[in-house]
Each structure stands twice: as C-alpha cells, then as structure tokens.
Image (spheres, rainbow, N blue to C red):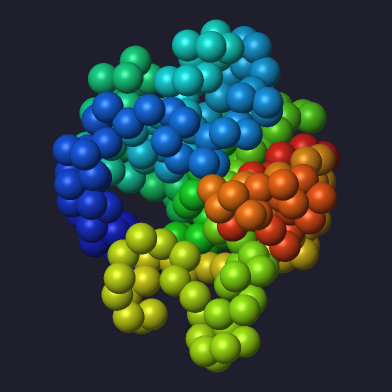
Length: 226
C-alpha cells in the first residue's frame, strides 16, 4: 500500500474530524488524563503522527516545551499550526527528517496500531532521541479484561476503534499488550520505565493503578532510550 494512498485516506479522515474536533478540550480523551504527569518542563518534543497536536499544544502552553509535529495529513498539520504547533507533513514509516539526538521526548499517540513497519519506526525514534531520552506512546490494550471476555465468548478480535465495520476494514492492523511492548522495546534499544492503564469506565478506574495491564482499556507507556 503506497504512502500516497494512506496520506489521502488519513487526510480525508482528518478533514471530517476537524469539523467536530476544532474546539475539543484536552481532557475529553481519557488517555490525556495521565499525560501531564509525564510532561517535563522545557523539553524539546516530537509529536509523532500528531494529528491536530492537541497534546503538543498543551505541552507548549503548560510546560514551555518546544514541540515539533509530524503527520501524514496536511489537514492535520494545518490544524496543529492553528494551535500554535509548528509541523511537517511526513510519514512515521519513513526516515524522520531530523538529526540524530534532536529530542528529549518523542510522543507517539495512538498510532502504533495503525502502521506496518513498527520496528523501523522505533529505531528511527531511537535515533532522533537524545541519550537517555524518552518515548511516550499510547495504544489500545488488547489484554483489557473486556476484550479477553469478548474473544472468549465470540472467538474473534474485539473492535477497539469507533467505526462500526467488518474486521477486514479496521484501521487497526497491530495489537499490543504489555508483554509485546516490552519485547519490542528490548529489540529496539528501549526499557520500560512507566506503564499506565486508563479506562473511562467507573468500575475499571479504581483498579487500573493495581492491574493496569488487565483493567486499562488504553495504555500509556514511558520507555527510556538505552
């Protein structure tokens, strides 16, 4: 599948999303509830596959970070610019247009499940991070207890995105849990430093701190470059 096809597909998706998300508050998405605790003051940050860079905007405004956004959708990058975040149109699955050791932190939010070349992207992230820099990524947690129950009862992968469509039309093409992510980190020069589970469901929320890999519908992971 060519990058031009993927770019056109996601650009069209962002055109429709931006109409309803232009005034979206940072806290609307439960993943963002835990991000401020991971943000450091005055960092240089790459918001990879940034979308409208609502996270980058928050980082800049509240933590005085210097954020660069990169997204395959020109519409998303224009939306990021309106939020005050400078960006570049580009694919996460190609060589990143930054010198080695440029960033303190790379934020890769809800994109790892959409891409083919996960290991290559991780190695590029490793390259553009400073020694001891951090990767913060988020992704749906395939080990979430409701997803496990769904598979047990139906013998099929549960839908982890908003669109109601058949499995062969899902945009999610990769599926992760804590063990898979730890193996990926080990293979690409990272080490997990924090693993956070998040769920909007009230019954889950008290237990996400104790058993994040089981009660977190979404996970946010901090990994250090080694």
